[in-house]
Length: 390
Image (cartoon, rainbow, N blue to C red; front, side):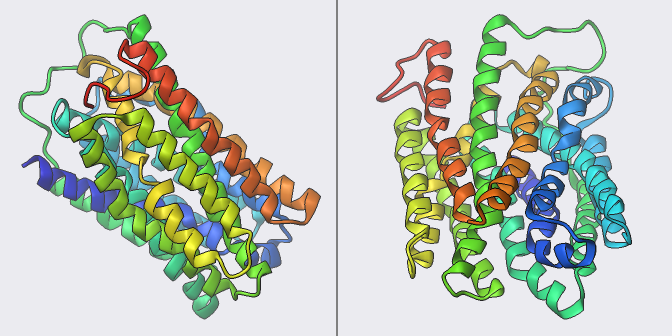
């Protein structure tokens, strides 16, 4: 049963990446239509994350009184409505407002999708399950990389937003009709408040920071790596297709990486190897003719530990405090994700070189490993080598 539930949540969560990728895919069209610069595009990308900075903790509290299924359905509906609003915009502020509304939906869905999988897989293959879940994000992004640019060129920049909204709406219907919670889940709704312990706070902050910088680096790569390839002579559609290779590959490498850690442990060794691969891929991308190889390396090695990092959040706390703890987790995550895209865009505006933001991504990937080491230190297990299985 739990694997069928995971499949349902995976398909529904694809809509998050599909909607998120719209602005990055049609950025050049928005620059022409509304007079934006690259910092503005980065700001719009970041707006998708902004509501989480303010609403993640309240959403965690609301989870004590509202079912996970309802929160996810509301979130997917907000994603659909926000994308539709952006597609109808005639002024720049209206695109931003639609983006913010979609970001509210992104918060609800991301927080409660993660909690649902943690509830279903606690103590049983959680790294594998989280790896499969989080791969829905690059799957949706890869769908957008392949389709959004073509939609925009063929029908106009509005259509990618509308296509993503339609998918999110269908996903909301699917979750509403088909999702069921596990029967053996401890009751965490209503009643006396259960607080996070000091250890849970430390573990949660380490996991959240690792997840935040990892994703901020990935989003920076998605937004600006195609521009690097265009500088080497690729067309916009060809560049998007090459970069999407990594997103398709990581769907499979992520699940395999989760299986390795579930079976053998060694999480921090895996993180160190994979972050080294991500950094090597970004360096390789700057060489003419190396785009395909860099994208393969990035997806096969660099992004493989996404679910392993996310699984740290599920390990950091008890089920009774999981909704609130996920609120803490995503507050930190959204703070990092909100800040990074405008900074990356400003680097391009200041230098005129799309390679500049990739150096920012390299730094962000590099600091994932220290956060993973700190997490294991606070868990009280050995820092390197074979660890307790996750």
